[in-house]
Length: 156
Image 1 (spheres, rainbow, N blue to C red):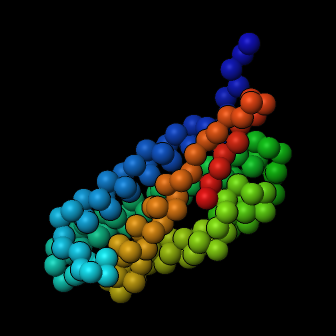
Image 2 (cartoon, rainbow, N blue to C red; image 1 turned 60 degrees about the horizontal axis):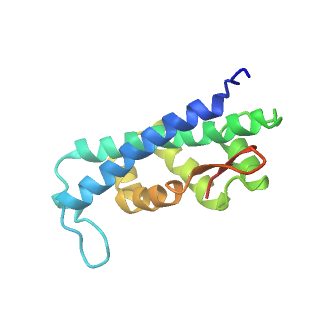
Image 3 (tube, rainbow, N blue to C red; image 1 turned 90 degrees about the vertical axis):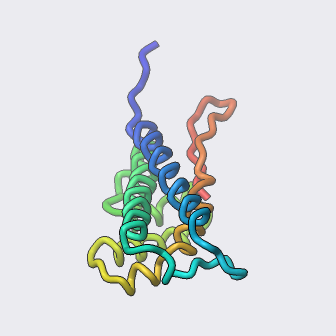
């Protein structure tokens, strides 16, 4: 039996690697910087912008891979009407691939803010609490193979 090359599976593997790097960044920042009783880091103590910029970059490429996994999975299932991250998110939500469509649309807005222009206020606005929340939601992405041997991607 010939193995079928499925694009979304390769991209999903890359996405998992990127997600792991985002997780490492969030954990490292939480470990190295004091967190107050509200779960926030005193950003005045957060070194210069290098770590913050690195965290933003990890978020951007993790999100890029996530929506492309959704797109590739849906295209593989026969949906050819996806042209960008918003289309992929809407279709993934409509098909039950993701559960929290609003969170995913918010991630698109955050990514657009950070990737199209860089300024300190935008970085601070989106910063660690948002990335940790995003990581925790996106972390639950998993691939499940059911008894029917039909691949299913579950994004929450």
